[in-house]
Length: 297
Ligand code: HEC
Image 1 (spheres, helix red, strand yellow):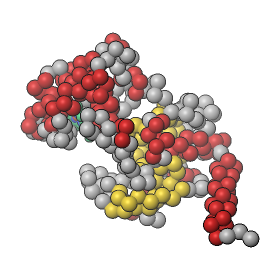
Image 2 (image 1 turned 90 degrees about the vertical axis):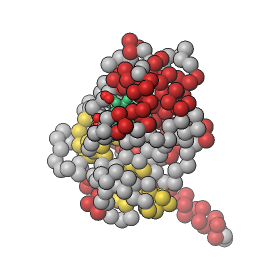
Image 3 (image 1 turned 180 degrees about the vertical axis):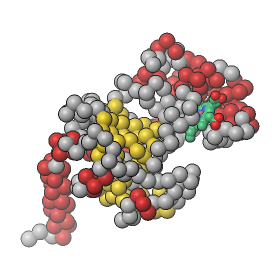
Image 4 (image 1 turned 90 degrees about the horizontal axis):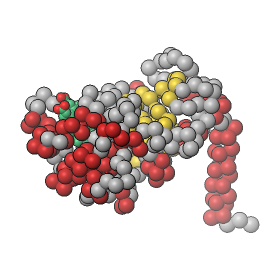
């Protein structure tokens, strides 16, 4: 006779088997077949990537996503809503495999928002936090999500967050912990590779340690608004190499980044009041050592 604990273990085993079984039954081809060439509703999710059908972009209706086996996770503090939250949705890694892609042809994802902000999801971040494409918060769809308490922006149509986030100790750079990635008003998910994107703005092997530290902070904290070529954020209208140009002007750069309005009263960039001088040194070192000729456009 099984005792209570082993009954629970068996039940969990069965549930896991059942969920995985369902995912397998509803795999790539199904969702790939659901990628439509044109948008049919504002709630469609746009996706780009090297899909097996040969398509490289398209739109998936929200109803199609809702019909998938969904995952439920709890976050004891949702930063955009300043409240605990239960998310129901699809882990991004699972969405990738449902679209017929994998870590070798799509190791890095970018979530792009309606205002041009872009948040990167490298493979190690996804492995650590299993970020999820959220379809419902506390049982309610996007029409009920309202606005972020941080920025006042609409949360709809898609939101990405994770169950309780604990910054990884080994990802702290110059005293700055890794930030949580939680883009809202997401309209598009790009399935790309690090080699074709972030690696192109990384420094060569002979870069200084300080510049490498600056590189990590710059990618995490600046690239979402200051993209390069066809990846990263377009929100600022100031691409990466323009920021590199400004970084050569120490006085302007440091004043601007810490308090943009002190330099440009109409600036829409958020102030980075908590950047230590050492971090500003590192950011400048990164942009100084980044050789434009090494950065394919
Ligand atoms: C949330 C979006 C956002 C983030 C994150 C962000 N910026 Fe900006 N940044 C802007 C916007 C918007 C402007 C243009 C300001 C304006 O004129 O409204 C700007 C302008 C600038 C400028 C001045 C460019 C010019 O042409 O005068 C510099 C320098 C700059 N950013 C550096 C940085 C650095 C370094 C970081 C990371 C520490 C960063 N930004 C992070 C949005 C952002």
